[in-house]
Image (cartoon, rainbow, N blue to C red; front, side):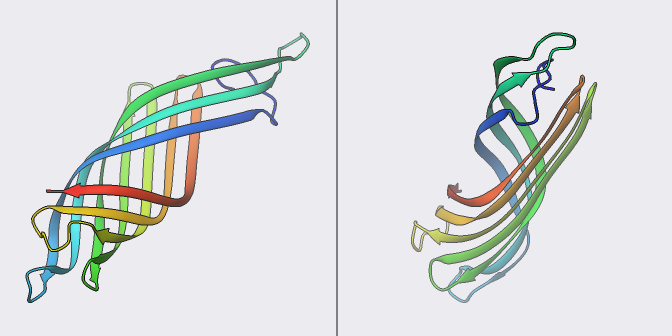
Length: 171
C-alpha cells in the first residue's frame, strides 16, 4: 500500500535520493606521524543528513469490488536525518587514507518509528596536498544505507548498497 492505494506486487517503483551531510567529527584517539600528519584516528561523529527523496510508483491498483486500474503516484520529500556514529581512518602513503565508518539514528516521534543505518568503506585521496589544516578529500568506496520508517499506516523499508563517490571539505 502506498498513499492509500493497493498496488500489485509487480508495480514499478523508482527512487531517486540525493544525500547532503554536515557533520562534526571529533578524534577520540589518534596517532601522529613524525612529520605532523595523522597515522590513524578513531573519531566520534554527530551530524545531520539531508535526504532528498523522490518516489515514483506505477502499476495496477487493486480496488475492492471493482476492476483493477493502472495508476501512478509520486511522493517527494526532503528530510533532515540527525545521526551519530564512529569513523576509523589510517594513513596509506603520502596522500591516501583508508576509512571505515558507521552512522545510526533512531527516533520515536508521535505516530512515527524511524531508524537509519549507514555503513561505508572508502579510499580517500587528499586533494589539498600537504595542507594539514584544510583537508579536501575525494572518497571512492562502498556504502550500505538503510531507512526504516513506520507510521500512520505507512511503512517504508528502503535500503541500497553499492559504490559511491564523495567530495569532503574538512576544516
